[in-house]
Image: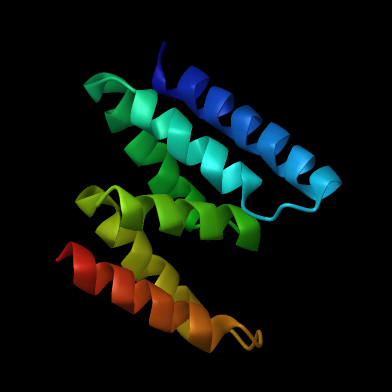
Length: 114
């Protein structure tokens, strides 16, 4: 499986988990499923997953970013630091109410990875 196919697979898996989470009113279901999926990946699959998660960090979708940041933090994905830094810079220019809190969380994650 190449990176593009893997990206589609992970995104579809996340979307299905998110849809089910919404219907069951279980906000952490998608994250729990992604966590279990990541644990099953081989080293090569984890490398591709790490790239996909770094892409998700820069998504406009807050729920996707939340899942990516949580997985990056849980699995100590150091290669995602540049994407986290880029997101922090972008959020510093944002006027959304949650931006300051997300910046604090990102800085905390970066600190734990460095």
